[in-house]
Each structure stands twice: as C-alpha cells, then as structure tokens.
Image 1: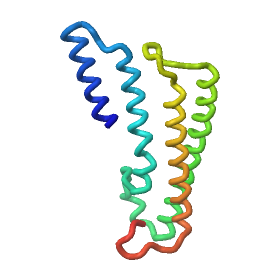
Image 2: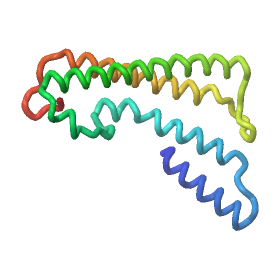
Image 3: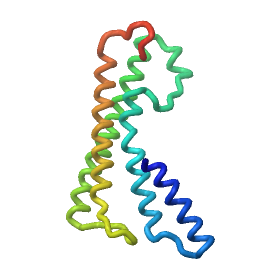
Image 4: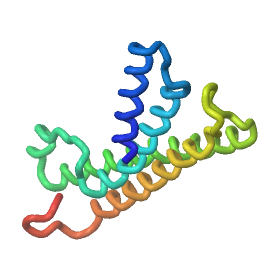
Length: 146
C-alpha cells in the first residue's frame, strides 16, 4: 500500500514539477516516511523467512561445526548491531518527543516514524536472538533450513 502510494506521489510530484512548475510541497518528506514504513515493516519478517541475500561460497565448504560457529558469530554481530540501533532509536524518540521535531514542509511530527523504526529494529533483535538459539538447538532434519 505504501509502496504504491510512494510511486503515485513521486509520479504526481514529477509531473507537477516539470509540466506545471508546481511540485507537491512535502513530497520528499512523505516519501522518506513511506520508505521507512516499507523497510521496517518487512525487515524482521524477511529474517524469519531466511529471505535476506546470502553468499555461501566459502562457508558451505566448512565442516558442520565450522558452519555453526560462523553462523553464531554472524547472528551475534547482527544482534549487537540491531541492539545498538534500537537503543539509539529509543534515544531519538525521546529527543524528538521533547523537541517537537517535525519536517519543514509538513505539519506532522517525526516521532511516530522514529518510534516505528525503533520497534522494527526491536523485532529484528528478537529474530536474531531466535537465530542464535536455533544455532544451539538440535540438528535440522532433511529438507529443513540450516
């Protein structure tokens, strides 16, 4: 829904800007907010489905234990990164709530979108924590993901 809205807004803004010399005021900010919603809505879902791009040229050649160690290190590093992003996102939510920040051309506050990003990162942390636990769980059965 947001992706279609973003495309429509961009088309109307470009046509208005070049055909009528009347761009949509705040179109850039609205597009930024919509991108944020689209990305952070599906980030954790993609992780839960193993849908992120991976390159396994070298790791597939490791023994099973080596693959588990690499996977564990990868998931722990990603978990740490998203914990830091979530923490700083929370700080930014508090800052924007106190300061009443809002975009230059729009009468809406920034904090709901920063909060949305923070919640999306928190859910991503949960997914990475689940992945770390999966590394320590039993071996997958034939046909299951590694």
